[in-house]
Length: 222
Image 1 (tube, rainbow, N blue to C red):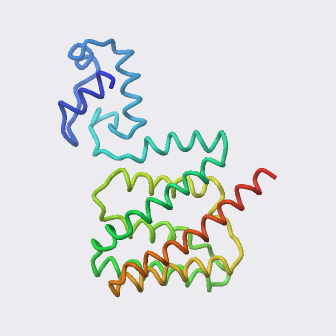
Image 2: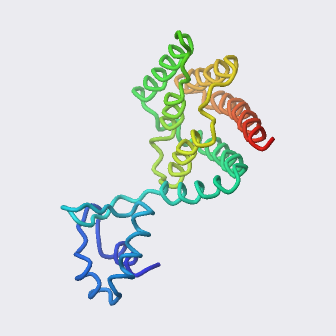
Image 3: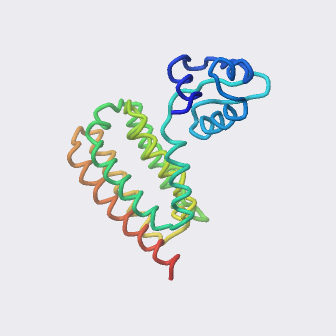
């Protein structure tokens, strides 16, 4: 780690204000120029916030910025990388399904049902709207009570890049109906405490998404 990251990890708490650059430069024994470079790395990783009036402040740890930076670069070089990442995301959701759903509360169940209602309203509207926001929020709501920043960072990054590769565009209507049919099966199973049935519905849903992702990626290279 750089001197600044070591200082940040070992000598500060969340929301602590960091000393001015000149003071910190002397304290750490590095030049201001090098310290600025190290600060920029910390900003890119989402570890600190820098504002004109409040200065430098340490932020709560999140895994997403580091993953997003790396995946964004990878997808720019070759969009096939997103398909590989989507496969990772699939395995993550399936692996953590049982651990996640047992933590959900009744208000969480109602929230999941509200996403389904909103999505169905959009699909039945005139004109038809793509329930992309509802799709993202639905999946994240299932896992949001996990106390694991690495799992959440991986899942959040998937949705951040979902639009960039064109998966939020309109596809055939029957596909969208099937997606939300599986979502409803998942919620029915969660509410009934039949987590195994919900896991099966999730797996079937993932196969549908995986096939669509593969088709769109192949079309981009034709």
